Amino acid sequence: MGHSAKRRGGDRHGAQPQVTRDSGAGARGSRILLVTPGPGTAAVLLREETGPGHVTVLCLEAGTESERADFSRAAAEAGSRGCPVDGAPRGLPAENLVRALLRHLYDVAPDRVLTCDPLAGRDAAEADDAGEREGALALAVLDAVEEYQRETAYPVFTDCRVLDRRAWPAPVSRPRYPAPTAWAVRGTDGRVSAYLPVPGAVARWTEGADGRWTGPALLDAPGLLPALSVAQGPDGYPALVGLRRVRRGEEDWNVEVVVALQYQTGRPLGPWRVLANPHRGEPLLGRYVGAPVAAYDDGGTLYVFLRNGYDTLNARHQRADGSWAPWFHLGGHKAADEIVAMRTPRGRIDLIARMRDEPGVVRWYRAGPKGAWEADRGPNVHALPGSLAAAPESGALRYRYAETGELCQWGWGAYGPVGLNGPAVRGRVSAAPGVAVGGWSCTVLAAEDEQGHCVIGTHVDGRPDSGVWWSPTGQRTLIPPAVVRDREERVMIATLGPGARLAVARQAPDEQALAFEPWLDLV
Image (cartoon, rainbow, N blue to C red; front, side, top):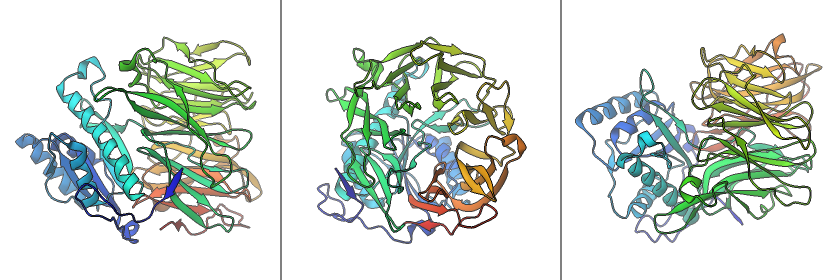
């Protein structure tokens, strides 16, 4: 079942009975609710906000004098970037936390929530009371946002951040659940849909037959964490694979991998099917699995991969009769929380995992359709965390080089990478091949630059070494853009802009160069 974003009443928490959203919010920026244990952590997240937006901060603790001073400096810097902060942090009670968070959600009516890591404290070095409090706070935020969405039908894009306090020269954060890359897909009828996860649901936008868009509709998935992988099979049906939190007691919980199929564009999503997780008998480990990654091979077999609680890798695939083979352990290489699955030129699936304890990646592959999975340390890939992206259109891997931050592409079977001559970007690069540009078949790339704008690149299919031409768009985006070809084989760029609103730009027809029609910003 799903419901579209609209006004709803009937709040039972003593807050405003209705939520209203100004239609001009996208022009001014996002309403951001930042929820952290204390002002020191809030300062780190504020420094990473590029704006525009208006921030309200909630903290469990007042923090030290030094942390409060650091927060004040970070708030002043954020305001100079067009991201003003609504005064000092508001306090949160230790008891009835979800209820208190709901009151603030109704008061602020945010479209984005930034909070801490639900898995804080999972490593032995961090397994202390502070880590436990941080994880408990994040779980309460997820619960409150999910209930708020059920009552208002508004999606709230929630980003759980992992804090690295040892980073130099200053602490930084990264997302626990990165946004999906191929989050916009063309259905079997040629219409494009966009899918992004929020707590307890998937937000879906749908292109109509007349080119107009509807959404976001919330596709209910109680307990769904903001982690989603979108894969499209040879039959054209998108598969949505995510993580769902399940309660086993008042404070005991675990996660399970779930999958659902979208058959007809715009119609209800198929039922969520439970794939459990590799730690069915170890619930305390099961909650620590990483975000799943899904991919189809050319034969139509759907594979799901994830990092397990021991930081090694597991895989599962769907058999021809629709049943699922058991989880299979790939081996002993310790993997970071960053894996990508890519289709090789032979139509099979390779898994690339960034190593946890040393530079480089491990490539997992099968020598034949029924062969055993084997590990290959050969790929000469040294990637910045958070930058690995599969390029199934060419059997390649795109990433930022760890030493310089330069955009690179490593081709299947190649020794070294090719530079893409791109601008400074963050996150992952997405792309679509086979786009007609001036009589050439080209690959169009899209990324988010360091100022939070969408940038677009293009090169001849399979020849990034011949030159990549990049252009700025000036379009703000909160996550790496998606690239997809529409029913007319024109390329479409999709972004999630300020106000957490979908914006799309379609390739202009009959152009000798790559040009786009004006951005369509969905209200």
